[in-house]
Length: 123
Image (cartoon, rainbow, N blue to C red):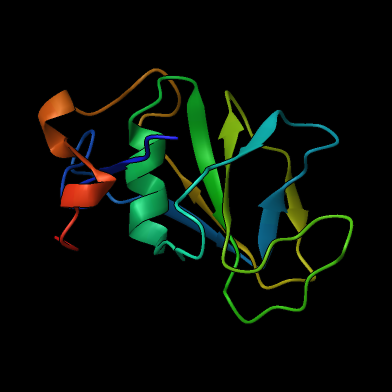
Protein backbone atom coordinates (compact mmCIF):
# COMPACT_ATOMS: atom_id res chain seq x y z
CA UNK A 1 0.00 0.00 0.00
CA UNK A 2 1.03 3.58 -0.62
CA UNK A 3 0.08 5.94 2.18
CA UNK A 4 0.02 9.63 1.47
CA UNK A 5 0.35 11.71 4.60
CA UNK A 6 -0.99 15.24 4.17
CA UNK A 7 0.68 18.24 5.67
CA UNK A 8 -1.34 19.03 8.82
CA UNK A 9 -0.56 22.70 8.26
CA UNK A 10 -2.59 22.71 5.04
CA UNK A 11 -6.27 23.29 5.66
CA UNK A 12 -9.23 23.41 3.36
CA UNK A 13 -10.43 26.79 4.64
CA UNK A 14 -8.16 27.82 7.50
CA UNK A 15 -11.20 27.74 9.79
CA UNK A 16 -11.05 25.77 13.05
CA UNK A 17 -12.59 22.32 13.25
CA UNK A 18 -15.54 22.11 15.67
CA UNK A 19 -15.12 19.40 18.32
CA UNK A 20 -17.44 17.07 20.20
CA UNK A 21 -15.56 15.48 23.10
CA UNK A 22 -16.43 12.01 24.40
CA UNK A 23 -18.44 11.34 21.23
CA UNK A 24 -18.21 9.33 18.03
CA UNK A 25 -20.07 9.17 14.72
CA UNK A 26 -22.28 6.10 15.08
CA UNK A 27 -21.40 3.57 12.33
CA UNK A 28 -24.84 1.98 12.68
CA UNK A 29 -26.37 5.21 11.35
CA UNK A 30 -23.53 7.05 9.58
CA UNK A 31 -21.22 5.68 6.85
CA UNK A 32 -17.83 5.38 8.61
CA UNK A 33 -14.47 4.10 7.34
CA UNK A 34 -11.12 3.53 9.04
CA UNK A 35 -8.39 5.91 7.86
CA UNK A 36 -5.42 3.68 7.12
CA UNK A 37 -1.86 4.48 8.24
CA UNK A 38 1.41 2.54 8.06
CA UNK A 39 1.53 -0.35 10.58
CA UNK A 40 2.28 0.86 14.09
CA UNK A 41 1.82 4.53 13.20
CA UNK A 42 -0.40 6.50 15.60
CA UNK A 43 -1.73 9.65 13.93
CA UNK A 44 -2.41 12.95 15.66
CA UNK A 45 -5.88 14.51 15.46
CA UNK A 46 -4.43 17.11 13.05
CA UNK A 47 -3.14 14.38 10.74
CA UNK A 48 -6.56 12.71 10.78
CA UNK A 49 -8.16 16.05 9.94
CA UNK A 50 -5.70 16.60 7.11
CA UNK A 51 -6.57 13.18 5.65
CA UNK A 52 -10.26 14.06 5.86
CA UNK A 53 -9.48 17.28 3.98
CA UNK A 54 -8.23 15.16 1.07
CA UNK A 55 -11.62 13.55 0.51
CA UNK A 56 -14.63 15.50 -0.69
CA UNK A 57 -17.11 13.09 0.93
CA UNK A 58 -15.46 13.27 4.38
CA UNK A 59 -17.65 15.19 6.81
CA UNK A 60 -15.87 14.55 10.13
CA UNK A 61 -13.26 12.37 11.82
CA UNK A 62 -13.54 10.48 15.08
CA UNK A 63 -10.19 10.18 16.86
CA UNK A 64 -9.55 7.67 19.65
CA UNK A 65 -6.69 8.12 22.13
CA UNK A 66 -3.91 5.54 22.01
CA UNK A 67 -4.37 4.34 25.58
CA UNK A 68 -7.99 3.13 25.49
CA UNK A 69 -8.77 -0.54 26.10
CA UNK A 70 -9.96 -2.02 22.83
CA UNK A 71 -13.20 -3.83 22.30
CA UNK A 72 -12.17 -6.97 20.33
CA UNK A 73 -15.12 -6.41 17.99
CA UNK A 74 -14.01 -2.86 17.16
CA UNK A 75 -10.36 -1.99 17.76
CA UNK A 76 -10.16 1.76 18.26
CA UNK A 77 -6.99 2.54 20.26
CA UNK A 78 -4.93 5.19 18.46
CA UNK A 79 -7.11 5.13 15.36
CA UNK A 80 -9.24 7.58 13.45
CA UNK A 81 -12.35 6.99 11.41
CA UNK A 82 -13.81 9.25 8.76
CA UNK A 83 -17.53 9.87 8.55
CA UNK A 84 -18.94 10.24 5.09
CA UNK A 85 -21.39 13.04 4.29
CA UNK A 86 -22.84 13.36 7.82
CA UNK A 87 -22.44 12.23 11.44
CA UNK A 88 -24.84 10.85 14.02
CA UNK A 89 -23.20 12.08 17.26
CA UNK A 90 -23.25 9.37 19.94
CA UNK A 91 -21.67 9.32 23.44
CA UNK A 92 -18.33 7.45 23.49
CA UNK A 93 -17.22 5.06 26.22
CA UNK A 94 -13.67 5.22 24.77
CA UNK A 95 -12.90 8.96 25.16
CA UNK A 96 -13.22 9.59 21.42
CA UNK A 97 -13.46 13.10 19.99
CA UNK A 98 -15.24 14.06 16.78
CA UNK A 99 -13.70 16.82 14.66
CA UNK A 100 -16.11 18.34 12.14
CA UNK A 101 -14.64 19.47 8.83
CA UNK A 102 -15.09 23.22 8.25
CA UNK A 103 -17.55 23.65 5.43
CA UNK A 104 -18.63 19.99 5.69
CA UNK A 105 -18.25 17.45 2.93
CA UNK A 106 -17.31 18.48 -0.63
CA UNK A 107 -14.32 20.61 0.39
CA UNK A 108 -10.67 19.59 0.13
CA UNK A 109 -7.03 20.66 0.02
CA UNK A 110 -4.64 21.10 -2.84
CA UNK A 111 -2.49 18.13 -3.97
CA UNK A 112 0.72 20.05 -3.20
CA UNK A 113 -0.12 19.66 0.48
CA UNK A 114 0.48 15.91 0.30
CA UNK A 115 3.71 14.00 0.51
CA UNK A 116 4.38 10.25 0.25
CA UNK A 117 4.82 8.59 3.63
CA UNK A 118 8.51 7.88 2.98
CA UNK A 119 9.11 11.65 2.67
CA UNK A 120 7.02 12.64 5.71
CA UNK A 121 9.09 14.59 8.23
CA UNK A 122 6.42 15.55 10.78
CA UNK A 123 5.79 19.04 9.43
